[in-house]
View 1 (cartoon, rainbow, N blue to C red):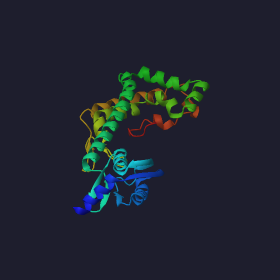
View 2 (cartoon, rainbow, N blue to C red; view 1 turned 90 degrees about the vertical axis):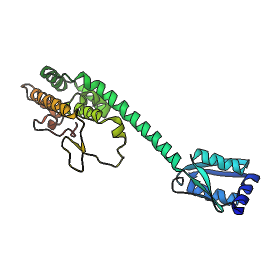
View 3 (cartoon, rainbow, N blue to C red; view 1 turned 60 degrees about the vertical axis):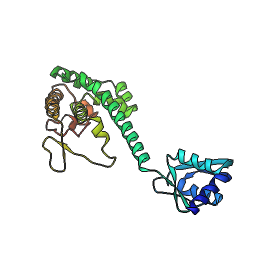
Length: 251
């Protein structure tokens, strides 16, 4: 107790001038500790925070408070050491905030894609024929414009294919909150009849898959109509494979 009290009194009573360019807390804090004459340390959760310090004659207590604030952390007294930590309450708050951002991002993406997909939910054979004919007869200048913008240029065309529309619909059935909780390096497999290692698709998935099968058949029939020239090699022919059943094989 006497040791901790002496440490606090030293922090409160002293001022400091300190200049350090942007660097990881694990590098900056030991230098700051030496300048202050105190035992300052970080923990793994705060070690990679970037700190840039440029102060002149400021109270040490104020500087430590600013560091804790920008690092979204706090200083914890451990005997004669002040350690920059991130308490579980702060970690949980940050995790909730990150999850909320991911959910909003997924919701926005699905909403945008669904707007295009819904317009094509009543696809007919005539629609499929017109779509294929439009791709087949697209002018060279239009093709170049699509190519210049790469994926974004082809996006409107891609979202008219049955497979991407089915994938968007299935993801909507699964839900933005569930998708947002999937880890960056995590692989999750959904199925109508899942194994012990898979997840069950929502009940609405069967109608989505049935619609995909029907629309894919229309697309294949349109592609095999007389007069279609296989787009002169401009699109992979397996996009129109009549045996194609894997929804994950988006063009």
